[in-house]
Figure (cartoon, rainbow, N blue to C red):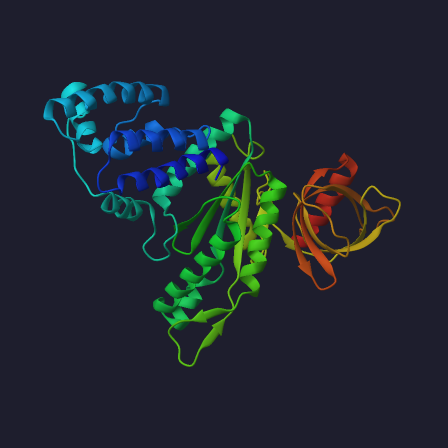
Length: 393
């Protein structure tokens, strides 16, 4: 989460401790509120105090004004009765009888309120944030990113072949795998942003202030962690370890979208592309993905990464929108590389400028998914004929 949201989340937790005291006296409550406000610059302490107690929402300036008026009301209340009164009582009386802002007051134990709130935002099976809360958070983060002019990335993850786990081992085992995956995701992404159970075997991670490259790195680490993790079949005796992999899609505002809906849709498209590219990989969203059919083809060529040296490559599949190749060079996502493909029956190679979309480690090499960023008209014609010739093979 963003720092701003972390502050907003921490304030109610500390404030809730004030409400746990047996008798809330005005002097002690005000001292605690002033101390919290001084120690947490930017945190709307008085606003959160009133919201926790009454669920009335104010701007912080209005909340401070209400607090000053409330103090006068409280002191007069105590003077009239002749003995100390708990501030919770006078707060409710102030908003019911004095300001009349509270029309339908409800009295509820703080711990009961917290448990109720958790049930609303947490998934029962995994204890992760649920899809309902995801929709609230992604909208809030998008509004914040737009307002601050910052980047916002979204990762959507889907467990590969999860249906086979349920079919082969049963749904109880599947539930156990989901719980273990959830813990792994939360542990790996805790420092970056909130994680959610998106639905079924899908999960999502919101990455505020993370550019596409950083989000791609986070997703790749998570993908690798899952692939090497030994998952336990909780319903077998003796203990049975299982291997599970996941595919992940990444999209970033403002590069890939201009709205919350498109951010989600494009991350989902990138996930679908990862599924179609062999699974157990991370794919970045690209405008060109899946516009063209990929055809298996082993074509030799060379890579010139705008340096004096060149490297050999071999394609795994090709389409009119991009190629997938294997190479020993360690290239960065989003990098533009010059690729020369040997065309049978022609002396001159086809030259493509390709943008790296994703990479997957292979034995002593890497597999790269790319989109064509630029190609000359003559080479485009030759390349298209090459791809068309593969259809009939």
